[in-house]
Length: 376
Image (cartoon, rainbow, N blue to C red; front, side):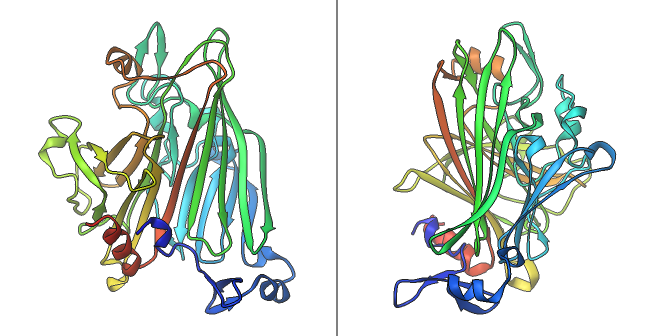
């Protein structure tokens, strides 16, 4: 079974071969929907807004809603990352104390990245450093790079019918560049559709400069309470799991607890088995949620694009999160990766393509389906 068989969209095909959406207890054709509303924004779409207060002042945001209760917010001014996400009012991701800090407050040196790390459904790390602050070939690099704190340009958000499907998307470009240095441009497109409980992130990164550039990318996907709990399950096709350090070796990667005082983060590196299409499916699930109804979040990615996978286990008070993190690099920082001869380089004129899907497992039936598909 592939993840496409796990029910993440509320749609069926009728006997005539027509697509029907199951919305609010009714199976409806496109024509049925359009007869019932004056505009599709009554059911699904997107809304633009701007923050006006505190360190979030000036941040633009785009709220997506699909008609199923699945909603999420994209921040063009924060590299088109995804801050909040929920399903029928239930939060899906962990949120930090910083809020959606405007890029004008970004502190690039040392660990200053942590002052604007809001957590959220997706914070992208990179494009030229992932891991701790370090110095590489004379260049000072801050924790986890700049890309999440660079405002996007050429932002286009819209909706349209594509046959019987109602597509909802935003796309834009983020450029990480300096005089005499790197010149990388990332085009990101984020898509979902009417009736969907998932979102797809598609990135194309191009080297538009004249020298090869290190390319380090990690998708920091942050699952929080109430999916995260003492009895949560990590569902993953892990062939081998390695703790990052001695501290991480003191715990099991797949055992969780209630929030703990003075908890020290644990990090695990997974070697994942891919399916027949070379995709990897990982999920964090809580079968006890809502008196046994169950709720989970899954991540689907292509192993050739992201050969590595990092699990961040942080069970501290107020920092209560599990990170599910596809990556193309290690976590030692660029200087360490260079010393280990493990950096991926992007040649002048070259491009790389990355796709990740994040979705909701809405009940225990769906959790069982993805678990069974991985022979867990």
